[in-house]
Length: 78
Image (cartoon, rainbow, N blue to C red; front, side, top):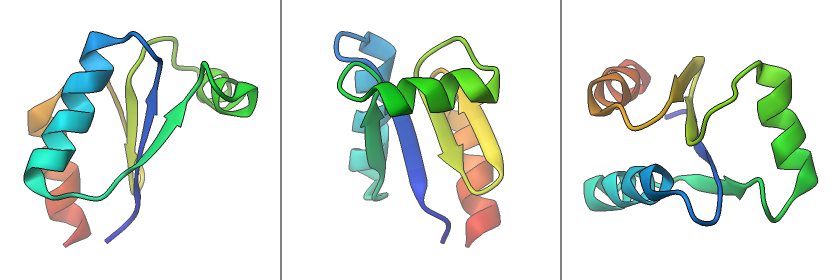
């Protein structure tokens, strides 16, 4: 399975929801907090995305909390 990367910010409620979702599903993910690392902030900027959270699953870039798109992307990785 492709790695799951979640770009977050410290006080973002949707970011917490995404992390909880993956934890509850037992899906390992790497959190990249843009407040703690300027390089992560630049990576999000370079993607042309201006909202958080952003979840990368394989070739999928999924902004926000979108369970349907998470499920679809994860299913493609299996």
